[in-house]
Image 1 (cartoon, rainbow, N blue to C red):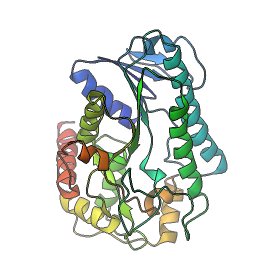
Image 2: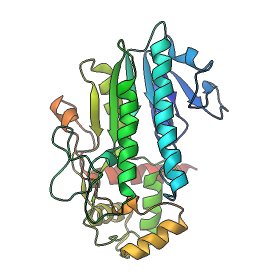
Image 3: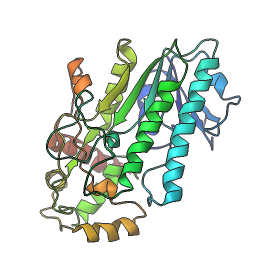
Image 4: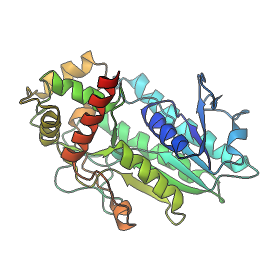
Length: 317
């Protein structure tokens, strides 16, 4: 297959590019700063010569969007919105204009679209879309609106010959440097990986190899369209999530943090506490209903595998 990945230079793009290339597929990455073979320049907003890569391709996987690992200032929130919506719109325009459009367009979305809740998991059929929860910071609703607008940009694209799937992805856990697992593991190793604000908030996640397998599954299943949750079937409270991670590395304890301490830490890391405090209890209803089997369905086993791979990479380096 020929696979085009707009915005494919980040962590998730690197994971997919490695796996798909290893499987023998031709992968083209669209990026603002091409530096490698098979990388093509685009600006994420306007049609240009890059659109020729989509014409005749088999699969488009649009991952473009400003990183959420930043301070949630009005300017950064607007940049998150614009980069996601504009890139989805222009990818839709390129597909609509193609003489030979791709068979499927997988559009990155986010599990953040669901409400902050503890009482029940969110699947695609019965999950509660967020934006009106009481007792949470008002700006959290903007993150939900970003997700809604992101998916709407794909839905509204006139691409009648291309199947469309929105990937409502949880955090993708991989051993790559700079990824979310790398950050969490570093905190655990420093003895800082305890409960945050009590640790009752749920963490939804997916192992990198299951993420790749789920993408391949959705590409192959021509009967699946619309939103699909990409998350392991067993989200767990943050205190248990970090306890399992500490156990995998062999760290006996982790200092807890209050909400204000988390705010100080987030400020120092130039990120936002929504990523720590929002309860993301998301389950993969459609994937399970369609027969997808997770290799890593429980976090302790996933953490063990990721720690083993981190140690192997660092030991060989």
